[in-house]
Image 1 (cartoon, rainbow, N blue to C red):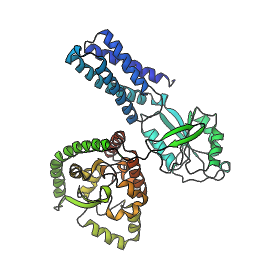
Image 2: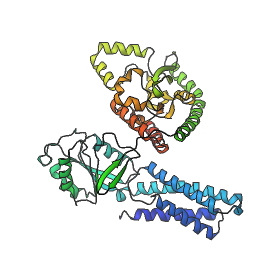
Image 3: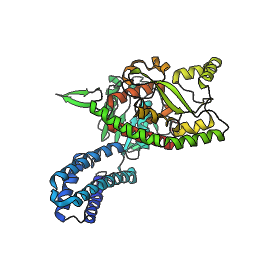
Image 4: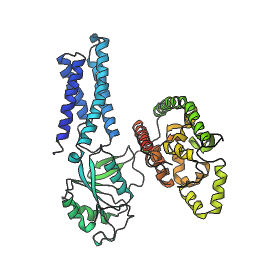
Length: 454
């Protein structure tokens, strides 16, 4: 099926729904036609009908922008003489169309994913290639479907290039089989995921795939400099990447604090019944110790704060950890490297449940309401981890630590300590309402599906 049919299908569905909503509110035909032209024009301008691959939060952002602009235009253009009811009807219509457009786009992409998704081949078998494949194939909204990977290791054609081999499956091809894979899998798009490669290797790969597929994308090694604010610029024929690492404005801080207050109030209101539930679980298991515990963590600007959590370990867990590390060098090495133990013997049966569902973090809404933490932000690091945070410490402490954040949304306990720091540093340089929304969505999804739980 031709991929260009998708925007047309989406447009027809939305026009029909728009017309019936307008009829429901008894709007005259002139208003239906005039407002409809304006509404779908805004949708087109903000890329709602674009075939570009995007994730669902990108689509939500586009719909919010188009809906907001349309609503402001209606307030200006529709005369006050139409009355309160007419303006209220228009407000309800805008809200209804937002959800209709989002659902229509989502379900068309999902229902026709096999027909519309770009058949993609990834050149590379390292961490970046694996993550690209996981994001593309697990996110059904994205119109990218990874059909296979090309192993670029130890081939004479690429000057004995070597990278860590993460991909191990039946859809793996050698570099010598590149042309065969393109033909056999009917590849439309190739993503080159070789950030470790030098210019000579990249030039050879680009030369080998030139003209063989519709689209070529390249994942560069940006050393953490790329941000949400980065843009590619054409400087008189020279390719420049402009980055922006600016601090949050005063207005952004106020907005974030207002969101935190709302979240803190909601979280604290549900804390009391949750405490009763956790206490019941512990007593039932024969554990009568205090269900709450507090611990010193690094707060904003390096100030020590005391965070609250539900106890998920046996009492005196820190002392037990010290004894375990003295007795077993392997445990000591694992903890010093990752700042956690995969099979931690200190975690109680109830604690495993609390961690899997992230309920152990719930009392931190007290810290959020007090202004010591934020709903979303960097991980609250332990004082002894300061030295291990290295160069990232100075940027991470410029934000309030969060109940959830980048590392929880990107694998939770599956993420190593160094990469957690990089993610938190990225958050500081890239904060936006949309980034917070994305993190919250991905955190909830990780908890629901139990991915990367502690």
